[in-house]
Length: 396
Ligand code: SF4
Ligand code: SF4
Image (spheres, helix red, strand yellow):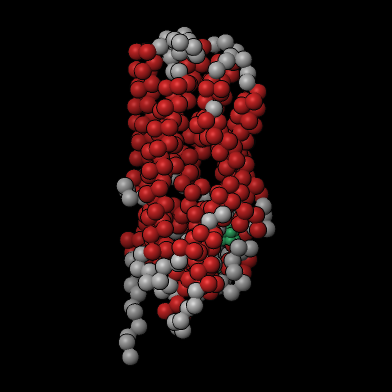
């Protein structure tokens, strides 16, 4: 008879996870209260209890293979009820940080999550380089006293091309990271990958969950879901306006209600959710706001500054102050670029891709399980297939 596999704790991973989660997971006694109270846990599953054990042992490969940290919406119910104060909700949040840093092939995400000083320095350097580039272009081709027209300091046509170039870079990085997430969770070491038909059957879930994050409305407390929904819809609306209607947004100073009404609603949505999150993190009353990693504060500060400078630039332009509007626009774009370049592929904004992708891939596994004839009989063997992983993650 073959000797059972001996599992050794990976102390380096445990140390890293302590940094990213706060380390309370070491107090977990596996009582399973969190699994019982979680509205998203399968009736016979081990979620989130199982991930606490994997974190305690630093089981890198199992964690990398798991989609479950992305299937939590941090309602905080499990942390509230945990008798050992092991903070399962915050542990899953920290695991999402760790996974984000592992999906990223450049190593930048890991650096940014592990040192807020490095993150701040990189943000400032990118902001400075952007400001110098914009000022250099503006002074060489336009006049700072003109906001639009032939002498515009930063004409919308030029900014539009710049936006599309940046979107291309972001898509490239995000695409690579998403492909690595798929590789770790669905393909690496997989003898029986899920069939293409399962991917195709479940495909509509991807845009659905991207736009609505519907799965998380099943939580008892719908507030975190509703706030994320407002944030997401505001962000997507502004992104669409900037990518496709920038000229209409920037021309003026008369207000073009066709585009500006949506822009105002989206800006109000962004500002409202940011203020709500900052208040929550300062008050530390609600479970999901009790623990703040430095990256949470930097993200919120950037988002607040980007929104406020965007509103200021808009107001100055509409009230006939082209010089001041141009200065505010340079500051605004100098914050937008580092926020998008760093936070979208390497930081917190990447969650908007990983979450719906995880829900989709989880459904692909379940679809494969439902359609595949699993011939293996042992749970260990079944867990080696794509379908088996779904079963294994739910029923271990
Ligand atoms: S995290 Fe808390 S509630 Fe969950 S199994 Fe561990 S001790 Fe129990
Ligand atoms: S935070 Fe909420 S959704 Fe996440 S594991 Fe805990 S109870 Fe479940």
